[in-house]
Image (tube, rainbow over all chains, first blue to last red; front, side, top):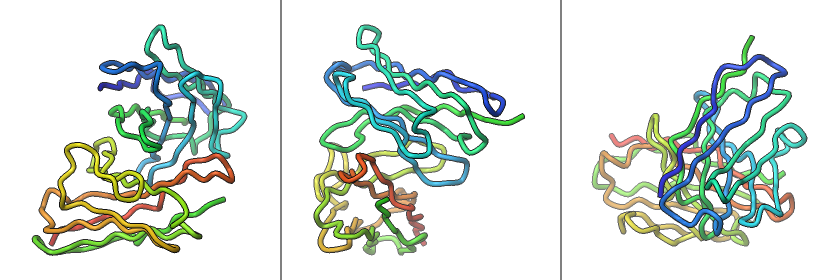
Length: 116
Length: 108
């Protein structure tokens, strides 16, 4: 199982960014997926969930209406479209596979910095 | 929103037992998962569904959950167990995952 995030960079407040997570080593289409983030020196914060079919999505209150999770099973990829970015969105973003209700595999994470 | 409270730190001598608590309103009615995170690394799942141990996790790790407290127990603590530990639940009321505040385990 391998998950690798990409797309992180420095972005100005109010800007947009799309993160990608490339999955390999398992049948991606059969697994629910999540995004989790960690601000510098802080704890883990769940961001978003998507069902295996893509028909169900959930978001943390802190990002609802600004972030959109999606998946492309043909490309074995998970995405997080982020808009109206704020300084408090600065964090390392992890994609995580869901198994037995928990997050059993994680990518190494990608840093998103929101600053002018 | 549902809140999970963990002690900020736990210190333990090598070979002894570390107990990390996770407090939440009627958490015994939920399934609790636990993660270990070492500096600069992604979290690793060490316990699922209260007391399930994923493949590759030593038997020294065990879990329990009852009432308002879930506990991750690490027996015969080793230097390599030094890390931050987070509990997690799925809150059905809000359809959100919730992480605990995290506990830093220090091996003396």
